[in-house]
Image 1 (tube, rainbow, N blue to C red):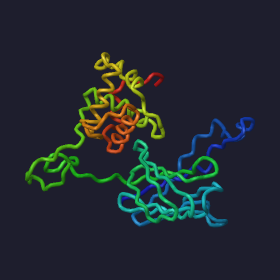
Image 2: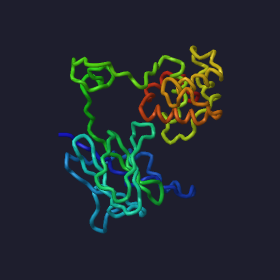
Image 3: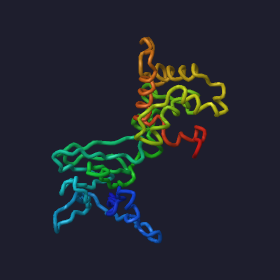
Image 4: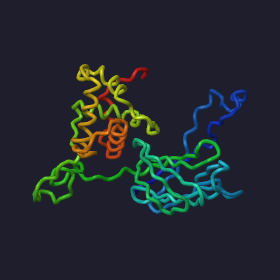
Length: 279
């Protein structure tokens, strides 16, 4: 039977206290870290989270005074789970721990919002740091042999049908090409840290790639050419006949947003880049 696992929040989170009293909140060095408590939910099982009421604790306790007594509920399904937000004012955020900034928002009063991520972190507004706990869904099921269908490009035609023209991949990228390395360098900060806001400029991309043997002759003009090639031909973000905007920042932002939205570059591609200085 599929199981959804809820990792309970740390009952003693780190306290941001005055430095003079920092020693008081530190556990003895000999104390091993406590293993997180887990709840296992079968399909149809539900647990509530929040501060709880005197004498009536909830299954997922969140003691922060800024969190509602009955903040919400988690309900397990087959290979996913649903989140209900009982708050009248607070929006909850569910982060995909495997994605580059991918998340869903659950509005106040929303009931049964489906969460499609296998590894998630639920964030609730709180008086201190956002209150958080993790939820792990069962491994998702996929078509045997990958998602390619009979048409050879991700379609779901009947096996061996072979009718009509084959589907053309909308984003045919070659990971061995220089334009892919440029795209990867643009996306790297957000792949490594989803909260990173700045997209690298041309000079930063050039410095990041120059130490690769295949990019030793790379120039600023070449980087700009690859960006324009991605925008106009490979990812077709703009009509090639459209006048070019003199500001390249918008193009870089569009490329990064599209590439991360459709997983055109992923964490496993980062091995194509040279090691970063300092680790």
